[in-house]
Length: 216
Image 1 (tube, rainbow, N blue to C red):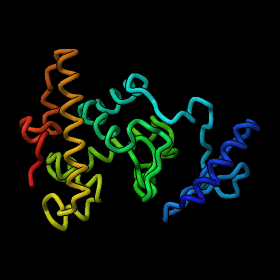
Image 2: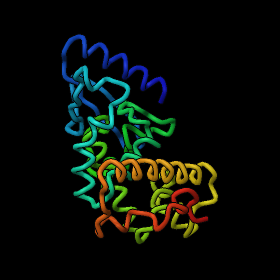
Image 3: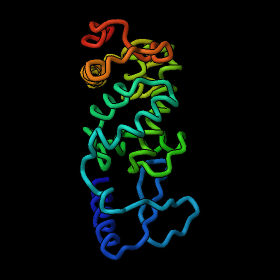
């Protein structure tokens, strides 16, 4: 994967210099193929404008799309920002060792299921990640720690244990997201004196203690 990604970066650089169009195809195994001459209808054109190649993007720039998707999927914006912070630290070009891509670190198979066309595009990625998080919250009856555990380790792993999996990496991830969620939520409340609406209640913890120490 590292070699493929390195080759892809070189191709992106070359194509950017030539101002050519680049097309991307991600197969079921997560292999990313890039070309300027697509030979298959499954290839999708990706945007390689210079502002898309930055390593990070500010919260302010993301705020409008986060607000839109938070309303669409009834999630608090602070929760979406917390997941982005934990997953990619606001780097839209981030790629994990497992092959997860973009701001909300979507796996290729998950992205295909969510109809995400370009995982590197912030709006497409956040739209897919937010939709997925909403699905997980519904699946686990509004239990935020379980939904976050499933986001990290997979739904079937959480289904198997019917609780937080005994996987330290996943438990640390849940604690990290909840910690960021508390920080962003308190900051939003302090700045706007926002009152949490009933539609948001299912995604909010019942106490700050839960934010600091998710249920075991």
